[in-house]
Image (cartoon, rainbow, N blue to C red):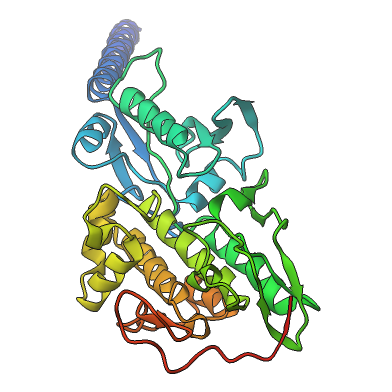
Length: 378
């Protein structure tokens, strides 16, 4: 009995010791875990890192996809190169096709969105002509300020989106419809940025048909006695009194627009040297030399391969569109296919700006192949 009693007391002491050690160990482990969590939070707060992982199938720019973005590097990128560049497809996904509008102002609207890692963002879309100086100033002001600041009570800049091709294919399809799909061909006569509007879904709409003319399929051209169109966008044949005007004048104007979208400015620069004042001529020279990419990169620092490839394609299509001889310009259906990458862009002739309709230009010899004309209408 004594033996049993002693054993019971010994067992009770052992159990107490084990329970004490377990409780004490649990407390130590809990404290250690809390310290580790606190240390991690402090580390993350000091390094201010945000993980942004995009869908690998989504087109990306400047190393945005599948990497860790150090928000401190945004300032360095702003100072050295540019902010991180997202694609329109990415922003459409982030905002669920711009479904939630937070507000709007004089320069655009703000939409609610989520990054793939559940970080809430606000996407501001600037509206208006991308050549508008006010839009440029607004963009630079916002990027230049919020991109260089970081505070808990200030919004943080993650990046921006500029898509050179945005709207160009849609506009080309609109002109293609006027030229090739209507029962009677419609010549717009005044294709320019101010006449290309964007709806709520940023779909381009060709507008202002005040100068437009109907042309039956039996007619190949219109003979005009007065000037139509806008200087800088009007095709050269439109400046010649009595010259036959075909629907290819719209193709020329569209080509001018392509160059302005790539350059982000007007094509004529009176401050430049005489040989560089008209950008298409400079682009043709560089294209013949095989240095078109260099002149595009020098304009606005496009360095991403995909953006550069698109910009070069747009310039090459533009060169085909602005050839002086109307019959040398491509059909808009071909322009659409070339812009969409479904058709190879042929190299423009080296004498694309040499002559048209037998009229001597820039001191060069005149053409021996005038425009073929059929019946005309006034």
